[in-house]
Length: 223
Image (cartoon, rainbow, N blue to C red; front, side, top):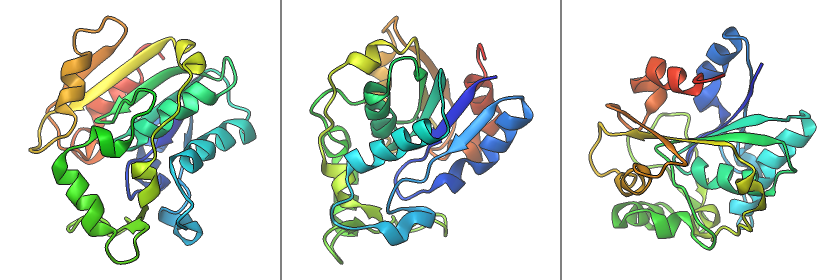
């Protein structure tokens, strides 16, 4: 039995992966969804102090409280920032595989702001205009989305590489079926890297809506 820890992207709580978690459990695995501080059902905890480190700590707290070992961390979009930091800081043996779903893959000293496109930087700035510290969701989003802490998009990640070197398997799932993707460059960078398994799905960014069966199949590879 594998333990999957599912981390959503910006503006989304653990609800985004609820149906996926149910499918993983049906397949005989353990699945835990994470709602980052200040988002979703934890939106009431938002403040100007909530940043990327806070969200990394959220995942580490779940790993510790649930006594998780040998886990698969799955991060969608912004969630790639979070699972990278969590894997690097987790105790030895806790994380063995990382799955990035149309997600940012940062190196030490990079932020989501650094890695995204000008179009998404405009979204962050326009969305934060009301209060200066939370980013309102883009128009047309799922009605369950909430404002997202701006500092988590801006803070640069700090990695020493210790935990990441212990990760045995890395998957990147590139979703090619939408325009304006900031992840094409990530796909191109990783496509020929032998330390990564790179997959392409003809899907919009909302992978669990557009390609649920294909995504589930990738998650279950070798599990």
